[in-house]
Image (cartoon, rainbow, N blue to C red; front, top):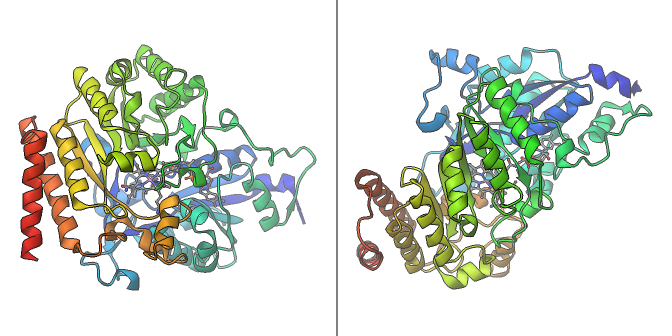
Amino acid sequence: MLQFAEAKNSSLLLINPWITDFAAYDFWLKPVGLLYLAAVLRQQGYAVRLVDCMDRAHPAVLQWQGLGQPRNRRWSTGKFLRTPILKPAAYQDIPRYYSRYGMPAEIFAQLCLAGPPPAAILVTSGMTYWYPGVQMTIAALRRLFPKTPILLGGIYATLCTEHARQFSGADVVIAGEAESVIHSHLRSVLNLTPDDNSTADIFPALDDLPFPAFDLYPQLQSAAMMTSRGCPLRCTFCASNLVSGKYRWRAIDSVLAELDWLHHGLGVNEFAFYDDALLTNRDQHFLPLCEKMIQQQIRATFHTPNGLQAKFIDATTAKFMQQAGFKTIRLAYESGSVERQRDMSKKVSNESFARAVTNLYAVGFGPQELDAYVMMALPDQPLEEILWSLAYVHALGIGIRLAAFSPIPGTVEHERAVTRGELASDADPLLSNNSILPIRLPNVPFEIYAQINVLAKELNKHLLKHGRPLAAMDELYQRLKSQIDLKLGHL
Ligand code: B12
């Protein structure tokens, strides 16, 4: 048996797998969880290497495309490379192309083989319905390293653990946050025994964790940050409490030190906050953090792709966000139905939402920076509820981001869908893809939802072009409703 001290010579290969979906776009996508593990393992003496299939800025990927720099859109976002692939049987009726997104397979193989042979391979996973990408990645790794143990963790592994054990191809599947347990799993996989001083299994507080190992990227254009983990709310559709444990937050100085390292040390100018509840502890956490970011004059831009809770955006918060350099602000609205808002978790009301928008407008934000998530195809959701919500958001002068609902295993809505007989309890995780609208109303065809999507896009275009809404709320709602009624009449 190897001694623990020998772990210090063990080389580990960390992999962010390909995505398989109908669409995927790089909104500052980074495998933060895997990078935390990389940093912890490095601290414990392992030699770690990262191959991120979704790294658009990797020199080998750019060279393959004949590019010097990635083709970026606003704020270093951009399209992933796309390879059309056959649709899984569960998607045969969906009239859309299906693809594998990320680096070409030959580049992936080259990069995996470029270092010393790994003692073990750690693969992360994202959305549950991206599991075919995980399977493909693991199959490719098996061909390259037939005898090396492969460990799988991440969101799919956590929410669909049994499915992953059966179908992913990994040797070991580990659910949940793993900084505190990864070392003991590796010890057993690698047949290592601990040395006497090993404290690796003591659960680390967030501030004891090293910064996520972003320095493993050869070129970095954006980074994702987490100033907190978990969420105190229990929204019926959300799985945050199943994947992220209890709500807790980091010391501001630690967040600032990480920001400083990423910005001045690694040259990153675009930052996405991945927190589930960035504003919850506003007075002790977010506002003092912004204040220091402003004092330190960090010349970077900040984005909140995960929806913010509107009720916390008062005049001061809006002012601080503007001064600190926030450029993409997404608000969690979900639905204008008061009953639905109450049932979901009471996190938002139409009044608190409108107040947040007014406060953000007052400090100079506009449709370029602001949009709101509106959920579509929720259980028993009348079309009128969606249209009313769209009209409400647009009339306030901000963009609409339609987020189709899908029941995530382990959530209240999943349970409800199973009880109502709309979903099998062991349904294929592919059916949790929001693109396929798994819980749409039985008498409403797919085309109607597609049309609502088109209408939302048209409203957004109008707002960006003219800087003001197409019409006031009531008129707008009537217009949307008559357009959808017309379409329904034609079908
Ligand atoms: C940031 C985020 C995003 C980002 C992108 C994140 C990404 N890299 O893909 C954005 C904002 C773009 C996004 C979008 C969406 N998201 Co999102 N998102 C999150 C969020 C808030 C955090 C994920 C994260 O980075 N966590 C931080 C790290 C530290 O945790 P971690 O990755 O889990 O890693 C830990 C463990 O898993 C483990 N681990 C990880 N890797 C490995 C590997 C090994 C070997 C081991 C042993 C362990 C291990 O250890 C890590 C450290 O503790 C989660 C909620 C949550 N709290 O997890 C939702 C979540 C993943 N998203 C979700 C949803 C629904 C969506 C959307 C569909 C929303 C919508 N309707 O539009 C879209 C779809 C995106 C798409 N199709 O491209 C769902 C999951 C859905 C599903 N079926 O899987 C979640 C769970 C939230 C929810 N509503 O319940 N999302």
